[in-house]
Image (cartoon, rainbow, N blue to C red; front, side):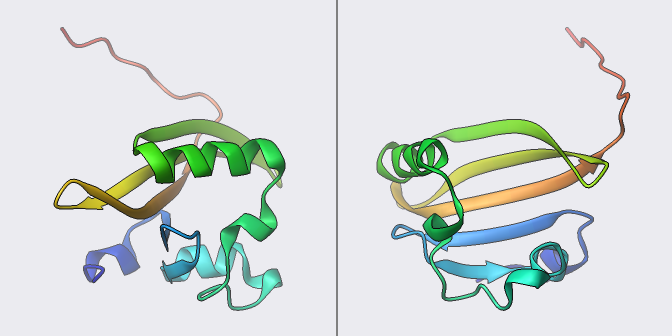
Length: 110
């Protein structure tokens, strides 16, 4: 299901189904959440607050994306969450979490 390149990509990748059950985590994602044990097969709703659950539920119902930055443990990350689909039907979510520098260039390309 997941291509081999996902394992060695410099980002944490987590994939869940339409119920929020985690189907896949690459090694970087597993390392990020290692203190919680093996999360594959567990429901990701159990580790989110009500606001986040609402956003996740909305993406699972309608599709779409959610993108934001966080600081955790002195590291800045960009979180990109998107519905994944098969034949136009939402089948779950993918989250890609990547470390970003404190100051990051921005380019307007027009």
